[in-house]
Image (cartoon, rainbow, N blue to C red; front, side, top):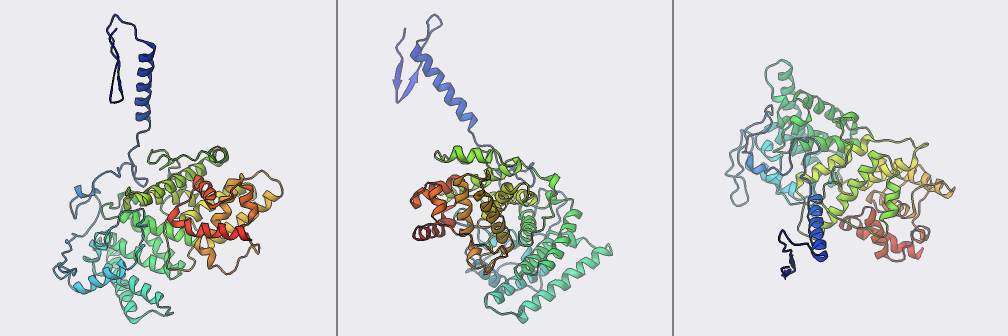
Length: 485
């Protein structure tokens, strides 16, 4: 029999038809076959849009020429290319009434927000000129006025002024005048400008400004009008994706839902895909050996839809930690799709607190956790106070039930739940609570969870969901303080 050769760590199995394979070579063949099957099985599935499963997120946006759209019924204005000379827009062709200096000032103000709507610690950075709203802003006078009003109102709020400045009021009046003219023309059947992407952007801007100003009633009125326009366009999936209108509509819908406690309006319960969106795609491999059996036993008993949400938030947490530590950043498009897939499912779920308290606590906890990652309102003192209060009330009830000996979440999960309650930024500014019960993080929780050091606590927290650059400093401070209490 020919000798088996080993070169560079590779085994070559040599055999002619009249020879019996040796036991050693047989094992080698089985080993290679097993590895090949494993590679096929673990190959990451391609990411598709959660909003529109027919669309692949791997498609190159550059393949779509400026001004074109994959949607046949998308109504868009032609988009001029912004031309910058010495970091100004003096060479950009603009419509009448729009001066380059106005654009430049707006871009500078928006770029002052270092966080923006994406956490650049884990996302690829996008310059303001490349963002989806920019083509509309420099084409549409109504859109520009709405953006100028939004930014001016934001600046007025940051200056602790209780009244709107004359300049902000001017841009607001111009926005409403131009928008009303479009609505009147549409009702008379004279034009279809009211259904254009630029008009959608105007309404989103007005709704966001109202929400930031804590005028949730006005924000809801704007969102109702936005929903009617989306329906006229043939539904959410028919909106343009090249300039991000589809995602921006969803963000506005979800943001108001989280602030107000009302259901988002763009997806009905029966229209939602409740399967895992992130966890089963092989995007990240994580191992949490010590706590994995306990946590899996707990999540296996959760409501199936809620369990899939848990898995996706955990997968996003692991992906974020990986992106923060490496150069494998997420695209803004992928980040948005993950956010939308998670938040629409969690906001449409609900459980009876009397009959199913553990599921409701986990649902609210996942929402609270997500507010530290998505739709961040860092310029507001406590934007999600209603949600934080709901979490406190349900968590206190859960702790009381646990003290009465009821079978509830295991100790590692309770450790994470109480830690999360203290980590959320809103907890530092909320002055009062209707529950009337303080929930302290003391030695009872970390002793029951069998953690003695912050490193051990971090291992436990990451086995559930925890993102270092978001929660790490505050979490360590809370843990160390609890050790001295």
